[in-house]
Image (cartoon, rainbow, N blue to C red; front, side):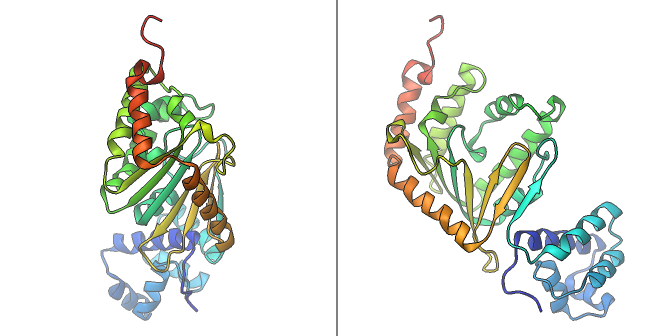
Length: 289
């Protein structure tokens, strides 16, 4: 029986099936006719809710003539589509483009991001992001342009109806990545984006000392689609964690409430950014000093 809610793995499986069927030029009804199925069965498979067997999945992928690599990926995903949460281990370094992260940010209704030592991905300038990538011990130099392009694709979500709240520690504003002018450019971008109606920026001041976000950065997503439950996304050097279990997500929601309590108001946060821009070239030593 198909489930009422889908999981992260289920949605990624479903997206792969949707792409496979789309490449045939058929819609769901037509494909159901080819397979001899009810259209609802195809719909459940495309949304990752189940309702099919592994054998039926293999038959559907064969009918779509899915390339072997993608077929094997989807067949490996399918038995786990009911499992909540997904720890993706990437090997030596993170992939150039995280399919899971990109798809879920694009599908989100609201996004809440916390970062303790860097500007959040969606607010980074290309120069800041390049400096951050270059500092990595595992990312090859020849991949920088592709990774920047993938980041800019994700940032396009900000032009949709996505509502974002970014909690950033003051130390992240002080830390210079790249040249002084690139640091200033990043602060200018942050100040500008804080004025957008769908974006809220709140700074956790150094004066707060110990704070509830010390366990590390994360992103909390809520979705338009009722079948998508809230999800938390976190990154390490070479793995990604997508958290769905209700109690675990509730714990992160508690962290957000406490970050909100210790952070500066929106206007105070913008004022702090402005002061950094005005004070010694954004808090950096003046040229020649």
